[in-house]
Image (cartoon, rainbow, N blue to C red):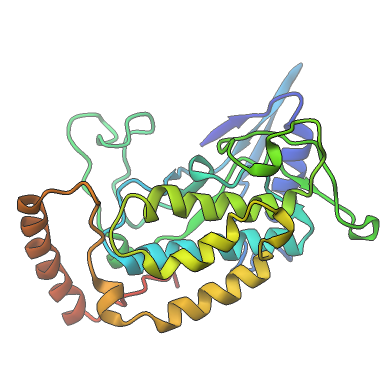
Length: 281
């Protein structure tokens, strides 16, 4: 995966990619910034960053609540790790979260049309997340910034990325702290893409409600989010974690068919001792 750096964002993005791809940060299991493999330097042209081939995190959709829980835990860990290193992502939204597809799609897929095989001759076939335990990554550090904690809480004029709904960004001329905005982005992702679209996400509602508070200072920090989510995860039963995620819009004949298929597949997971929480090793 290649990315040509933009002039106005390039220096920051390259610097932060190098930071998180260098030791001691690179080998930390809580580091979920996509590893930088190489940088192609061209004469009279911006550099090009080289990453491994990744895939949008939501394709294919999650089958179980356990798959979602593992995803959200990893991304919360990743943003928390960035914050611990005094870096605000500032655009940790759906399009900037990817998964490593190497185990789910061992024969790969077409880089432009990800539903097709690499030679474009057929539909791509993949394994489930429960079977493969993928790792998730944060990309696009073009808006990200690292701050000196000695200077106190940072204040930046808003930069709108993929999610333009943050309350503190309504006035584009009022500087605000970007760290609580990262918390909002993650909470709003869960609210809009899962709580509002799927059954069974009541367990996420209290935490998400706090993450999207109108007043940024009332939102939990990423440390608090991770601690609270870990408590939530530990209270979920194996039955819940293995249960199928069903959209609100799903009609009953489809639900019946998919439920039968789901429990048949789940029986295979139980027999082969696949965890209900598919965490990467």
